[in-house]
Length: 177
Image 1 (cartoon, helix red, strand yellow):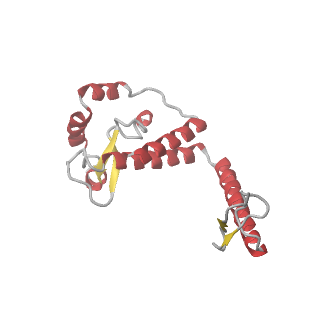
Image 2 (image 1 turned 120 degrees about the vertical axis):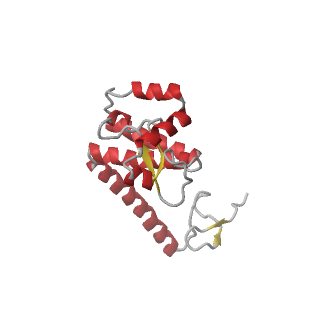
Image 3 (image 1 turned 60 degrees about the vertical axis):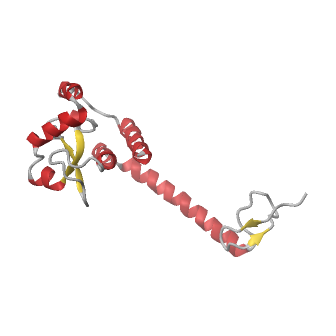
């Protein structure tokens, strides 16, 4: 039984594996060394990432979650337009909070509390809360709005492993959209 030819990952030449059918590169020493360098670089990059993450503070993890969460909200609402003024989005737009993060941190990552909002309404009109309220009721309904109001004041303190889990959760939800 002969071993089938494979393409070398480095030089892209066809070769017949000599040592194992899983052999990724040809028998050229330059290709073997280059492949080893690439593998070592990947390993160092993974180790560096792991060490860097070990130095992250709680607030750093929260910021990372906020970025991923906002990306999900923008992707979810990009076809719906601004919740306050109804304009369709072109270019940059924000993930605007109905109840601000400063006064209600427990609703920071609540999907009913955060919706796509144009930069003008969110930043220049300070959230345009009156229009946001009307748009919110139309978008999520009266029952979910009452439930959102009921969640105000509840204590939400995520641990770092929970934050990491939420980051992965929202990355996956963004991919699914």
